[in-house]
Image (cartoon, rainbow, N blue to C red):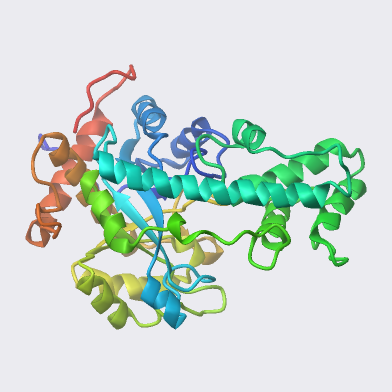
Length: 405
């Protein structure tokens, strides 16, 4: 690029959630201040079901000189695997699958039928949340009848378009802290909702652990406010992929990989079998959240899939109350090595090139039949890096500035 030597990689994070679904971030200003402090050059917004944060995210990227990737995440269901008790990338629910689309067209658009399907799923998820709120109020009423939760109030105060379980857990913590003066009374109130004399294992000061505990004790299976999700709240994988294609994106399978005990789901237990299964589904791209994985396990897994020609990206999610750095680390805050950073960088470069080509009304990484242009992968890596570098070397002062892709 005009004699400029391009870096081998830059710090990039291809998967963060924002307050438009649920996030550790109170607002997007926090995201960009952290990105500046950590020298992050690229971020990918990756909210559940919605693209409502795209405009604010894009304008923030312009102001802060961060390259934007426009992504989305779905929760689907593989019914045969569910019947067989096979866990996919949800460690607790057989058959449930998390699935991402990356490099979507911006502005976000869908055909009317795909939009109807997606809105139907969103409506079902919010029906479940409303039912959980009703159950929570039934638990609260005998303890303190003056305290009442409402969907509208929770949405207005803690969420945007979607209210999720984590918003409910946060609301319970906040209502306790605002309704009782002493921390002992606040915790006693929460414990009374747990029932059966169950005691908290934390305190009011540890907000992250407490919200996770509230969610686990009240809102998950076996909890007093749990409401089972309607099957209509899930799309089949084929429909999810069609929505992603329709929105101009690339299908990505999010890999769970190992947990803290070194265990894997049945679907991911063997890298060879996972590779075969993904290829059979027509999926050639994966993403990982290294913060939940052992370094050596991650490294070996990435080497295997990179040797198979897969596009690989990394992210942090930030989909829990815990605030962690934007810089990618493996479990125990161990940093990625240069090999892993280069693999992840090449992956986001492919997505950036795809976005650029789609914005030019040209063919991106996904062909018309839904297959991937794998023979163009190296060229797209190079193109994507040039697009990103061009973006980073320009100055964008106004939200309405012409985007470079």
